[in-house]
Length: 145
Image 1 (cartoon, rainbow, N blue to C red):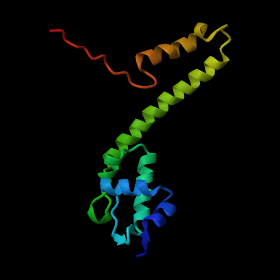
Image 2: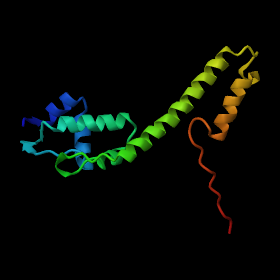
Image 3: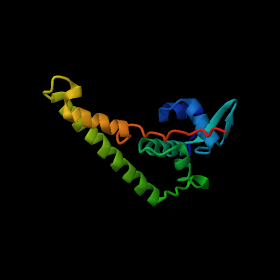
Image 4: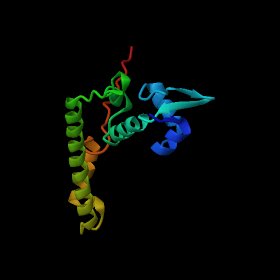
């Protein structure tokens, strides 16, 4: 097994050294020692970093990704967690597709202004209700004494 210092790992993985230090702090990767002041990693860290990148691209949080690793570099991927993430992505895709289609229609709407376009107004109402875009938080009520 090849030994790589932190600069080599950063270059090969395409992430800054600060990210590697952060991942090590979170327990996602582990160095095998030091060469002078530099951390040294086993070359298998590159595969682990690829798994982390894949998890991040799929929308998993680092804490969720950490649950997928067992000690000694073994994987313990929870298939139910994968299915749940796939379902979440399906929902997001549906929302974004509906938004895209509505915006394209509103862009072609022949109404004199967007505020007179029925489709644009429908999108506006959906946004106000939190159906699309960011989820709205319920207002916090303060009790008066």
